[in-house]
Image (cartoon, rainbow, N blue to C red; front, top):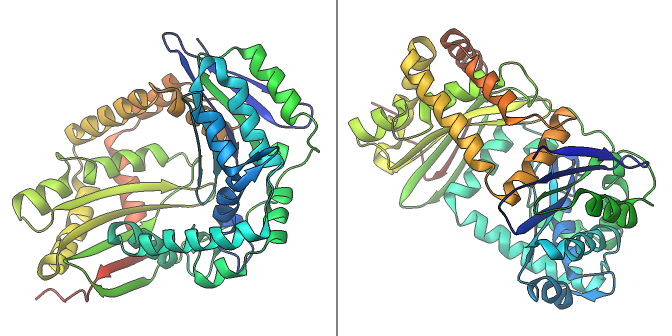
Length: 409
């Protein structure tokens, strides 16, 4: 069955995709705002709001919110990214209304109690501490800071001790009122879902929201720089990035395929040359992260401290060589992996709902998977090489965790 979209009078978009052969549904409210839209000095605000709405909303306490969905065998979850915040329910098909009502309460009727905020502040600080104790997690925050110095896009989603301490109840309420506006919201559902029933729920629960759009985020510019975390761990973790491209840039698919050939799997050049042939690292891969107006193209490597500098030097060499000598065979393999990843990822109701909303937020419409496959098929070796070379020609951001990066002899 095909996906369909509707738009309420106040601007909120509703997307629905019934799926045959399933008995469950995923429904989510997707806000087109995240950590990059936070006020200066209040990094972590979007994430704190996501936490706090679960502490009580509508007529339910925190415990009652959890019990109401889990009594039915379902689940309620949320997450915050730099450019998106999501509230999603998974449930049996008959409980679509319950899941949607809970989401509406979280976003529209949270209690936001001051005492609960003080308790939850400690929870978020514990989460921050856990992230800092996980080198292959925190290194990407360090890399983001190096790539976008002095910009909100370079700030950590969790914030830091000072910014978390500065968040108060008025800031939480202001964020919800200013950022969760109908023009920036998508209610998406996939699975065993009735289109008319979802539309009726959307009108009842969100139709009276005042029209409007969230404030535009400040454009970001890739800067490049370094961020070294000298704490000692058993391994030295290294991440580097060059300027990539945004979600709608015509070179995004070419760069993504180049990145996959470079370091997207066990057959990739980085894995084969750095790990298999030289034994310099256990974990190594490349990745592409687009945003609306900019993006990152990078690689990550974890190696013994004595080998890390050599692994990084070899990785830089492999990156440059791939931009010059990427083969048709490598491109075809990367293309097959990309198409399989896209189509396999759409087989669950939750990922299908995520896909619907993200396509609308990025492109203003639902892009059929077949259209994306055709775009991947159209990428040539020359285009993939050029996309890699363009990224390599930009400045470099470098982050390390785990000790001092020695010089290669």
